Length: 475
Ligand code: FAD
Ligand code: MLT
Ligand code: ZN
Image (tube, rainbow, N blue to C red; front, side, top):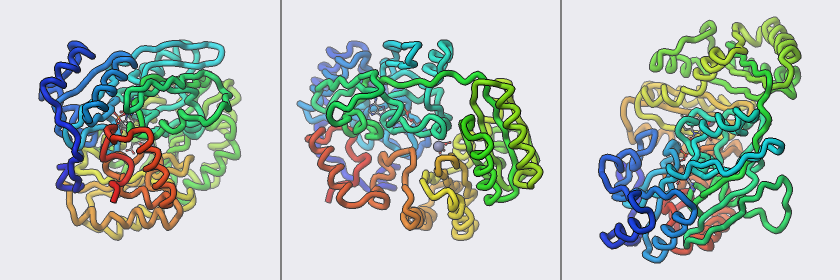
């Protein structure tokens, strides 16, 4: 699949030998996986659109083991693909050829948690949902949440700079990550695992690794700021008659719910069709062209309910919203969130998925969707728009029965040119990985690309870390 759709040539790295396997066995005894059946799952991405052919998967438990592995690979010129939960959307998490897969699955220990500051320090392989449970038991929440929470690792989240469903309230990982421990390509352990909120001593090196998609170093531990668990959470799921009303509802929402607003997500009618049809979820509201999910998080239930009720009165009476439902209890709250969170799963069941993750001016967020429907006609099964409207992030997805090169040609570079025309970003939160590394130039100037290449060369002179990912192939 890989080579057919994305022409790329293997770089002259060494090939793993019997001696290498023996050396790895000494570094991580009993955790050198060569069984093809186990390797199969780690060679294919979540979307099942890219596939590598790695012959070995390593499962270190400590940073020191990661350091030994990388020192060895650096010496031997062996390429390495860091892997967390393998839920990435851009093919960055799986090898392109025979890169060694370095999994963080066994690096899943909490190192410390401080209940006054809310600072969590943990190993990179902790699963996001397990961390959420851990901090919630202590009166806090993780500052990020995403549909992949049951599988993704915190190290993978940091490596992709994942946005997700709480971004509107708690912001980017560039703000909530306080420190990182990273193993560099040559095996050097860079301990920047600070827990300080403020620290202006020199360059903030950890920022370089947030969103670097495994190309600059392997993140082995994370220090992250957790907000207190809100006492009152409400979710409203509403139907809107048009996208203009979705936007006006957002403005009204910011005005009336302001400080308690914690999410503003949207999905179109085709998304609802997909989740009801493929996942058998039930829609809680009348059929509408658009749906919005609004979450509030605050400290006083009565206060929040009153505010929400005023807001709902206003949007219903003005016709911005035609139908809606509100949840406060955990079960219903989860059911409403599932309608939004599980869209990507429903899309995968619909056929081959062409995925675009764009940052656009909020006013024009949906324009490209009807435009593409007209452009693609019956060649596409579905053209859908959903996403983190509150953050100006559209998920534009197109499905077809099977992969079609002509459909891809109709989509690209059109989608990227359109986005660049709006001065948008061709990757709002998923990163570039393997699939999108060629389109970085639509959102960044040549000078920025050059500096990125120089940073890569400085930190990973042999280019062994996640080759073929993030940065365009050099001329
Ligand atoms: P992987 O997929 O294993 O890896 C992702 C990238 O990070 C790869 O390039 C890999 O090499 C690198 N990497 C992984 N671990 C490390 C490490 N320890 N050190 C260095 N590099 C590493 N993303 C969003 O931003 N917002 C969303 O709302 C969102 N929702 C999602 C919903 C679903 C159902 C799915 C399947 C994915 C979603 N994603 C979302 C994509 C998102 O990128 C990932 O879910 C998550 O952040 C990746 O974590 P992971 O542990 O699975 O990493
Ligand atoms: C989401 O917001 O649902 C995720 O980013 C996944 C996707 O875009 O499909
Ligand atoms: Zn998203």
